[in-house]
Amino acid sequence: MKMLGVLSGFIDAVGWESGVLEVWLKNGTGYRYQGVTEEQYRSLFVSSDFGRNFNRLSDLLLSEIVTG
Image (cartoon, rainbow, N blue to C red):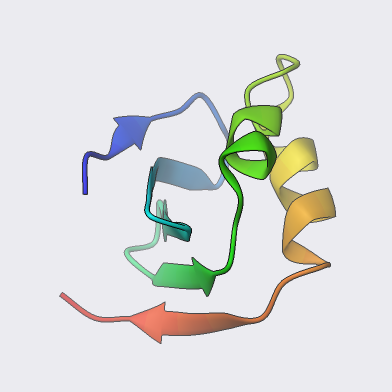
């Protein structure tokens, strides 16, 4: 999965592929979200406040912690 760096106080990078969103925080913790549409992924980049957009989306989704 290709990861993109983002401008955020707490998120380091995000990636999306085949319905899976992966998010890595600046503290090294990673989260994986299943069932994320491409439209939902693109909505993260709509405004300059990536963190706020991510928080809204993550409230709707279940995540699992990623290691590595």
